[in-house]
Image (cartoon, rainbow over the protein chains, first blue to last red):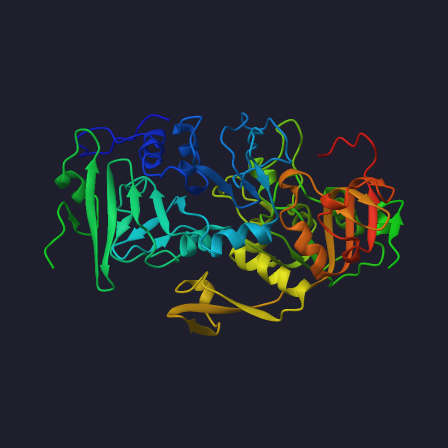
Length: 230
Length: 242
């Protein structure tokens, strides 16, 4: 898919693959990571073969990397996105009770999730567009609520160029105050939880050709380049 | 406990009545799904069913979890024939609405109720039903629409929701092999919701690739002990459905 370009953009926005590549840089060695459906799933393509990161799929799989091309492979070795990973040494299979014990128990270190909206308080909404009236939660609420590090990968705006980083989420929430890092097609933003009434969005990086001012124009809340002094 | 070994899928589900609550095993996708039992249940014409599943009814529109050379079968088959009063699941619709899935179509027409539950809460509700636990607290869903109307309680400074056990009249599950004591062996990621559902159904019916003599399944590899299983039905050798 070619990168999107909206009226007023100073330069092209990054591709979905580039978003995943950037997010993959933030996965610590040795961690257990759950990747959501969509852009998050692409992160698996940007890690070295000998990585010590262990991917968890909530349907009951720990330790997978490469996927068979869509529709090929063994349906009895599936990831949570419905893809079939190739068997590799060190895989572990388990049932859904065990899998969500891992998640709720805080044993999964990082989750990478897609989002419809993220708020200035680190809330995430990713399971239902209100006007549709029906949505799919899947494992997202358990992962967002219980995983110590939550990384969101998403396009910075809707297809109408409306901000997705907003003061308050207008869509139904998935979890409150849980997002740590937002990786979009124009920026990388860290959510800094100084204390309960003092949560700031710190702009860490912009896409090539984009300035802070450009990113701020399509973001509904204030971004900081340096944390304001307390 | 005597295990009933059925000769046909119809025999396996013959005592299920309209208005029953039925769990359907698997995660979503072909692996671990009791697809032949589902087809028999569809063909039975039973009505007003309450279904409990996980990822439900997205494979037919998206191919989710199915090999691309086989036409997917999912929970949508019961909605096409208007047999469902309510479905309880975590993932009833795909991201896309083009084309509309059978469940969403049925829901939009007001023909069925859809209850959407976070996946970890759903599996724990099922586990609890089988384990004699009436209710439990979980942090998942606090501050979201899932919390509406639920009792909340703080433990060690964190807020939790009270959730209740979810039993069923029948559990239709899928395993790789069974012995004649009903012990089940699973392969790969086909475990998913099957072992917990086996414990939560008043009657548990297992569709298996092969029924073998006791001793053929290594006791170390038994995923569901036979005490939870009431009926077995063996797949025909060479069945093309995964």
